[in-house]
Image (cartoon, rainbow, N blue to C red; front, side, top):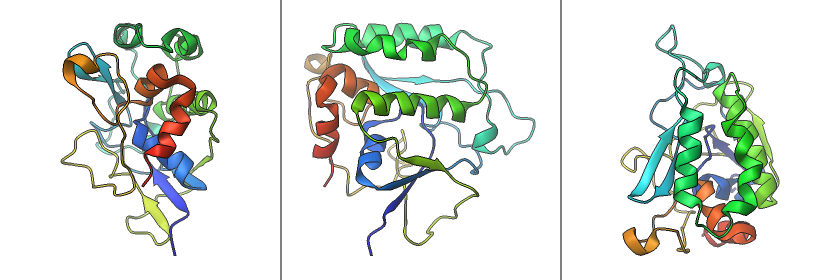
Length: 213
């Protein structure tokens, strides 16, 4: 019996692969009871800058204990990272076809402040789903879900910014599309959903469908 539920980590402007799962599965759960994992999409995303793929990260407050649940991770505002992210996104996508069309909808994420990373990411996901005109069909886990739980497609460690740490996803087949700096560095697959919506606009949801094997 094929799994009908997908289990994802939270993610900051998640990659295209992540949003493919939102349209692929009728039920999606976001893990909030896991021990927070550093150097993952939970607090970072990859955009396409003038010099190629560029990782931008949301700083998080240092925990008093070594292990902290994802739901309890707080955002740090010791540095003005919001301004840096805003300028980085502007530099990367200002010349893209749909930048002006969507950027006003995203500005609040770089002006307002959220206490918790999970709340921040969920609000971003809600806005992106609205832009994509897809159903934001997720729920938070009530408890930690162990690895290899039956009838659940677990992507918590599959969708990862470091290929060597990720696990092969046989149901994700990224297709090429025109990117701002593609002529300089070639096509870079599975960047942040920002790359897709700024370059393809209303066709983004059709692109997500095309990536499903």
